[in-house]
Length: 127
Image (cartoon, rainbow, N blue to C red; front, side):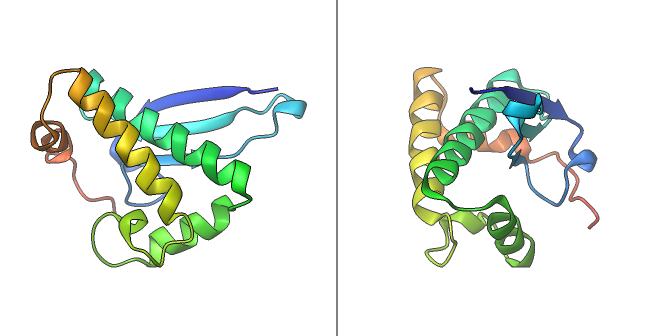
């Protein structure tokens, strides 16, 4: 069974300084898998980010890559886009999700630069 909840939240409510997050649930117990994205004020950006997180989550889930290992890498990473680092335990899954996200952005008629500006006004989260 797939039981999925997508949430758009104020950036300050993220678990750490990220614009997108996923938390595996326990659907058999009625607890959904959660996709959580920061509210950019742009529904297109929010949906694009949620799509990325869904693809990344599902690929990690299928390949046995734990949320704990992904989050630990993200929190310790210095710089932007930890999943793009070849050392990330979920690098391949992140890059596949990014490619799908970029196809979605193009289908909406946006440039990647325009889409990425959606996150420019988010205040860094205090960890």
